[in-house]
Image (cartoon, rainbow, N blue to C red; front, side):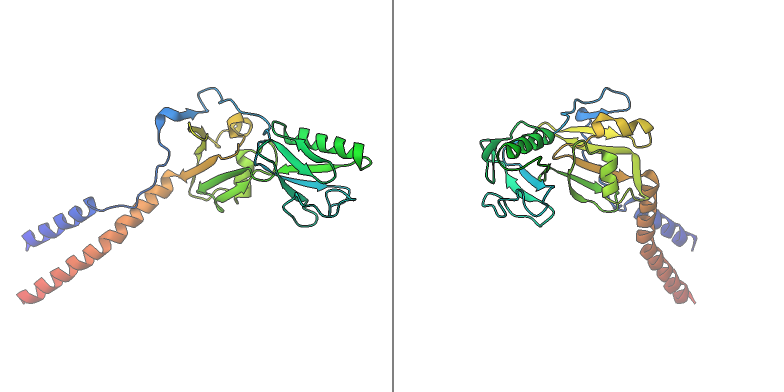
Length: 257
C-alpha cells in the first residue's frame, strides 16, 4: 500500500512539472532596440506632424458647419462627410489638395496649423470675409493592445497626443496592467522600443510619450496577474489527475476487500 501511495505522489508531481502552462506573451523583447527612458536621454521627437501626400484632411468651415464654403454647397473633390463634421479631401501625390473655388494648393510639408492659416488666407482673398476654418489630419492612427479596457486602433485627432491621453480614450488600464513597463514600438523600418514607466510623475512630460503616426503601444500583465493565471492553470490541470488517482485508489481498495 505504501508503494502505491508513493507512486501516486510521484505521478502528481510529474504531471505538474510537465504541464504546458498558458503562455504569457512577452512581446517585442529585442533588447538591442530598447530605450529605457528612466535612465537614458529622450529619443528625438518630430514635433508637430507635417502633412504628407495621400494624407486625408477633414476641413470644416466654422462659420457654416454644413459646407466648406458658403458659395459652394457641394464639391467634387471631397470625399463626403456628415454635416457639422466638415468634408474630407485627400492630399494628392504631388502634395497638393483640391479645394472648392480656389483649386489646388500645396500643403505637403506644412503643419496642421500652417495649413489652416493658408486656407483661411486664400478664402479671405477670394470668397469669404474673416473665414474661420478647422483642419484635421484624420488618417493618423495608433494601435494599443494588452491590458487596457478597450484595446484597438485610434485616430490621433490633435497634435502632440500623449500616451496618457490615449490610455484614457481606451478606457484606462485594467487591474492586471503593468503600468511600470509600457512599450511604445515606433518606426516604419528600423523599429525602436521605448519603455514608459507611468509609475513616475515625470512620464507625463516625457517627450517619448508623445505619440506619432503608426505607433504600437503594448501593455503587459503585472506579476500578480501572471501568478494568478499560473495558479489557475495548475489547478485546472491537476484536478483531473487527482480525480483519476482517487478513482484508482478507490477501485484498488474495493478489490482488496
